[in-house]
Image 1 (cartoon, rainbow, N blue to C red):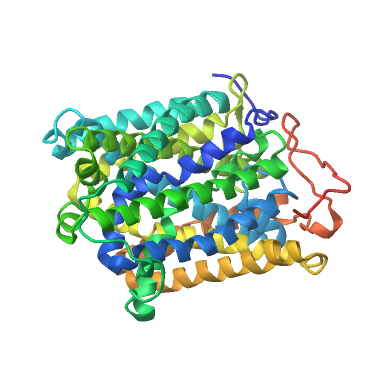
Image 2 (image 1 turned 180 degrees about the horizontal axis):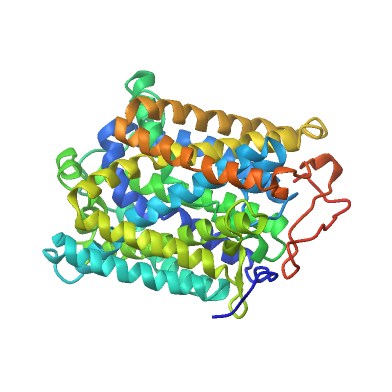
Length: 489
């Protein structure tokens, strides 16, 4: 296997349509609905559609922050670069590290469902076999690892097939659910209001769950160096992706509340979509939605791999992590060292977590702690855009709203979620969540003392419309100056 430290990622591979598909796949609509709907309904009941609605608003603020920042700094590290160049390099590194830790844990968490749902297509009893599910899940993970290693074009082609089938199935069942007449209860517009929340504590409980339905759309920013016209494309794709998954989340959450009884939801907490499918289309419905969830799970393993490996690639390139992580394969133009390292670590963690009970218990707490790490890097990105655009916020109403106020509110919401999570999670989950971030201090301080240029950044200032980007194919990156860059929508 050949590599070159001076090569960059392959530019101009992805179109706007490709990146929209990646954004939707990153949020894994079918998987998120199957894994989390029963938990959300159990926490807030009929207020579940409202929880998703009111979490979508600040999430759009974070998507706007990514969009605005991506227009003035194209970097595979995304928030790692933006936060480091606006707030402080230490915060930037922690932002990137938070994504790396949360994504690695999520890949481990998502592999077992991929295996069990694949087996459920053939025999429901096989799906309960943890050992067999582990083998099948590991096989899917290795396949996705090879796809990501094969380059952006192969990755997108695989994603178009998986997400395409998933979205067609979800759209079909959204229509079938609308015309379903055997309902457990009638829809009421009050479900989208605040009346069904049990005070602020109830709203907080719903927010802690609903906010992370959306996680993953920001993979478009990690693909920015491989996207055509990325300064506009990646941000636009992220916004469209959030909008699409929001509609899917709302439609299916309402359908679950309308069509299924409370007892059905409670008794089938791990397989609500399959039960919904059987209700609206007896015989075939459950199987088809299992296929959608399986494809969604596999698809999001792929997008998560992209996020974590592109982030590590940017860190290796900046020498804030071992420089080998910044190596790019000569033929495939992918960060092969980062892919192999992440894949190996995640695979070992996945097998160990399902082979040893005690490790599995620890991993369960680790999965719960993902929210803490996501809130950190989303919240910091929301603050970073306000700092980057501080001299331009009063230049136009759109800059003030979309580049300032809305992202700031999104950041404050994320930090609120972080604080609220501390009161909701177990001590073990908090230790893993905060401890995982704290481990990042070791490489951060080590490479800071080694004199990495990342810790002496060129400040990101939108008013100057000038930025220093990595230029693919050039040794260590070179300054590229863009004059007259438009920073307004």
